[in-house]
Length: 464
Image (cartoon, rainbow, N blue to C red; front, top):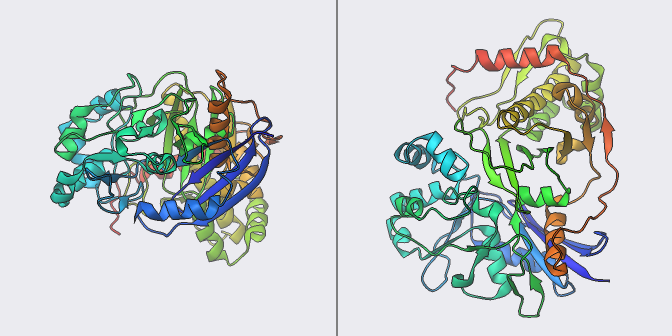
């Protein structure tokens, strides 16, 4: 049996899967936690990989890393980490994002050049923050890597001059063009103040090197692209991932360039493209309302399913942590339609309908970029909720499939490793198991209630 290893280095933990390269069957696994926060010393991730990986990587013939996107790792001329990495969820560079957007010709120009309009998540804005607030560190920066790039480098045991990345990760930096496949050096210089070594963008199925013990190392990928690879997405497939935040993404044959900034025009891990919409609020909305109702998960589902569509006229605008889609960073949640007849069941269902309606906005944004959803896959922690599964098709007005529970990001990394090891032109066709299907019938009253409240509150200003 030929074994490959897939690594998911996320914000919260490292997961390692040891997988049969021919069938995709997981034969062993390990995990280790990461600390909370919006910045982190990269050494923590390497230590977690050693803990989670154990001997799993050495038992494999090839390995790949899928990691959290956007994070900034600045290295000096000796390859030493200059400061803790700034992560995707660090928003301190929001002013720099606004400044760069204006100085770079406006949102439309950024979308055409890089596929996206920069937000505080993107690496380029963090470079600009570094130059403005830590000029000595910016001046010392000789190379810029992302988390997955750095871990791949550590696995290979080489210097940063030999660093590699992949298209999906490069497309989240804000200084690489998914359309032309080249770095935009002027953008790097404009943000950091000088040029820096950037990792070479490897081919999707390339072997970029070997570990000291001889294990082949594949390019790796970003976490959403890893999930897409693990789910075996094809053109027209759309994933709605319901974690603490929500992501809506799909595989496309052409790059996206959305001047509104709602859709990030990322690349995928196969040579195609992965337009993506991110919402700040998803499963956390359900957790908050569940706590308010003082019920467990099963009790919450039972309440939500006991209420009629439209929740008795109750509507929740779920911007509990502000929102990115639409761009309302200072917003708070809004509950509308509360009457003396409102029930606990109405509140539970309103939470589900509101959270899913926000994801439906993401579907609409993808559609506006030409990606029509032929198949919708629901994954993430909240996809295990029976209420979410049964209500989602009515909010989306589309059939929904829920794949078997799996670590799809790590599985995608393992699939890439198997692909690189095989030398074949296409990834292996692993069987991920049968999905559970739910039939969609649009609940017009739900979508109308939500869109009305969303639009009515567009001009509200909230202060946190």
